[in-house]
Each structure stands twice: as C-alpha cells, then as structure tokens.
Length: 327
Image (cartoon, rainbow, N blue to C red):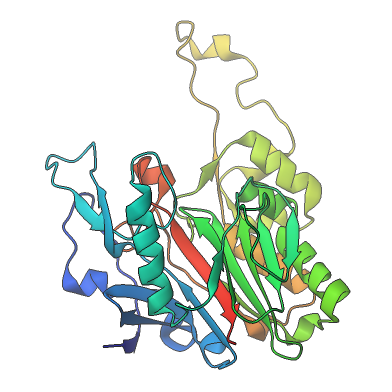
C-alpha cells in the first residue's frame, strides 16, 4: 500500500532508538516542496515539483526497510539494524544490496527500468547515455533522454541533485561532494543538457536532496582557500573564521608563544560549509530559475535515524537518488 504525506524534520539524540514519528519525518522546508511516501516497505523522499511530472519517476532513498544488516561498532548493543543499503560495500553482502535495489525500484514503480549507477570519483565527469553500459562508468553525473533508464547517484553525506527538462524530456542525476561542487559539476551538467538536447536552463526543474548540512560539515583551511579562489560569493556559504582561512593566514604563526610542549599546539581553526547553498547558487548561475530549485534541509549527519552519514558513522550504507523517463 502506498501512502504520501508532507514531512518535517527532527533531530535524533545520539544512540536513541528510532520512533515512529522520527521514521516518518523529513525536510522542514518541505511543507510545500517535499514529501515522503511509503511503498514496498521503504520510505521514499520526493520533490513535489518533480512528482507532478507524470512522464518521469524519481526518488531519494532512506535508511530503513532493507535486507542489509548493519552493526554499529560504537553502540552498546550489537544487535544488527535492518537497513536499505544501496551501495556495494565491504561490510555488506552483494545479494542483499541487489535485493535492496530491487525493492527501491519497486517503490519507484520502476521495476522494468534498467538501473544505471556510476563508479563515483568526486570529479566533474558527465556521461550522456542512451543505453545501460555493461560496466559502471567512472564519473559523477549522468544524463539521458532515453525512456526505460533509471539513472542514479549514491551518497552518504555528499549532495545528490536531480534535474528534469520537461520541454525535451531529458533527466540528469548528479553527485556533488565538496570537490564536485568546487568544479561546478551541476553547472556543467546543465551546459551538457543544453549542448546535446537544446535544454533551456530556465525551464529545468531541480531537486537538491539530503546531504550533510552547514550545521555539521567542518572543513579546513585548504577547502576554504579553494572555494575563495573559485567563487566570488563563497563567503556566504561558510560559518566561522572564513576570511582568515581563505586569505591563507597562518592560524598559529608563532606556536612557541602558546607555551605548550611540542606536539600540543592547538588545532587550526575550521569553518563550516553549506553545500546545499553552494549548489543552489551554482544552479542559479547556470540559468536555472530559483523558483524551480527545491532544496532539502535534511542533514545526513543530524538525521542518522532516517539517512546514512559516512562522516558520523564511518561504517554505514549508501543512499540513492534516482530519476528516469517512463516508457
């Protein structure tokens, strides 16, 4: 039985058991833009502007309802958790991941579609495909105008982005970590859609899915410097001493003044990066209309009751964001 509801977020206390309310929560900014639906025993997050396009199917997976068995090595209880891991991992059995993928596709009403995922490498490599390759392609974005292909990216903190061109019936799936964001992979994907299919950026519908939030994503001076060198408005995406770090100032120029023994100097300051805001700005700079961009405010690190977070959990599963054209 399929159900759909508007969804709101709540933060999970560390180690707390999942409540029914938490299991059914989702993005706070999603009262109008995001929803969840339960199908085939799993919870799917969806952007409502995309859900209204009946020529396509799409969805962002969540954590529960799978065949995989994940044990938290830091928890007191070693009772395995049943999770919907959609990425092939050392800790998981391939047969269980394949079962999870079938369940995910069924929840998207895409059982007959060919699932196409990538071997992701944190790059700006984009593939335009018209058939399912025999082996996963290396790269971080897929574009297709071919019905029957369900293109997907995997994440566990990075930002998943789905694009749809309703005029020419073209779709794209993008994996944007900080390196892909720095390389403007979302903007380049829009450019590739224009080049191959005549897509008009202002007509694109975009969904920027769950990922690690500004609240939790600490990065060092090297990341701040990189963003400062590439984006004029990068400061808007950081909290903390961004100006000092981006300018290359040494946070501890005279460590001997701290009067601490060798090896005990204070760590360099960090800043917090908002990848959701950065990718929204990049999409807008590519010509995508702000009104057509739906951004989830779900943080994977805060919401490990609902999602996977590599940074918080280390040993964890992989989420999947998928989109495809119905046959």
